[in-house]
Length: 511
Image (cartoon, rainbow, N blue to C red; front, side, top):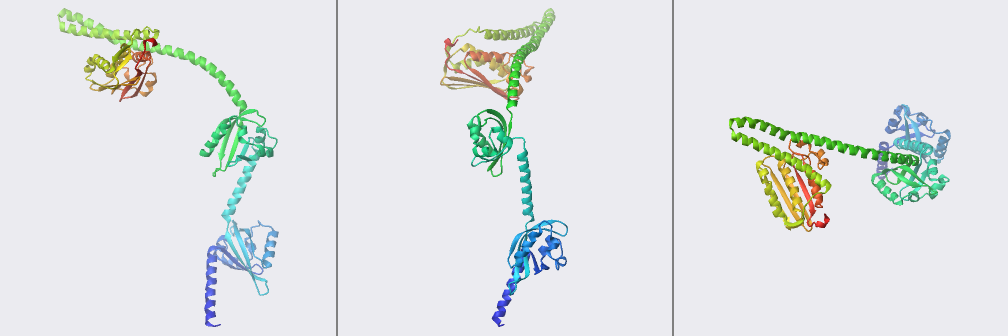
């Protein structure tokens, strides 16, 4: 062998060694003689089989036989490799500790000069996890098939792209009135079975957005007869296949409708009766509560003042007598105001309200009205700020509007602390008049806001402030006479804004 041949042989030997090293690192490798006796087992083989190299050398592969494969399986394997051909396949083996593992196997026969195998190289890859996943999937599919076929409720599987039914169980066939599963799969068109076809389009949008749908649908059978069903649809993760479970609830719906109709009829009768009784009781209770509170204080004041005035008269104390006369006058005025509220509300109920429609300047009118409550505002050390935008003249009832504004302004002052500002804004745009009155007072608790315009009703945080609970009821009736509306926003402890909206022009013919 010359020097060049030695170099080539050395290089070839190194290449072979490198290939062997790489193969040993990546795969499970074993070499056997022509009889299948193991002559070489790499570390990967020892690791997966749990046998040491010493335990494997001199044994045949029966040592790792799991008993899963038949004798014919191994006969065919040996027939292939003994004829000098490469064999490929998957083998289930058993490790020393009894655990099972799968290997993807390729067996190469090494041939002598006569073309006969004298040893075999087996290269394997661990595919245990893949085989276990396949086995689990297979079992899951088998369970699903059993559930699908044996279910007592209709189940459908549909290809989302084509809207074609791919699977259906016997209850599903019966529900829609088809002759067989084959008949349904071939001829079923979902839109033909919706009473309202556009419902299917809406349902599909929901299903594609959320991946599922639960609702109740009115549907049609093949013969056109109608039925109600509870529907549950679920998409797979890829949103390519949907599964639908249906329950025929026609009889339940019919019974429910009949029951609901009877209950609704009885409930309406009872609720109307209870409502009338409740309103009457609330009115009585509120009136008694208001009257006992609002009348007691001024009457007590009058009685005590009269008693004291007798003593002062005997002693000639005129200054104190005058003071108590003023107290009596104030109490009488308060009682008179309460009675006026009663009479005003009664007149409004019966339509006995006398007023005229006239043209006037809204900014001037509001300014004059503010001056009428100026004394009350000053007593409370408050101020009123007024602003106006838009046109000035309107055709309305100044008399009615004044009653409304006086009521709302006195409330704003009464329910605000000393030193707070009251704001009024008016606006006339085209044919609409808007007036807002804002205070920074005690506000109206949220729980009380729904009942604010109810007769005799007073907010829970205003019980200790004088009032009949009729003012806002009267205001609402007055605004209705102006063909307008009243609304408010309020936050407890922050204040309230009342907003009036009414037409700029009101004809007397409307009365």
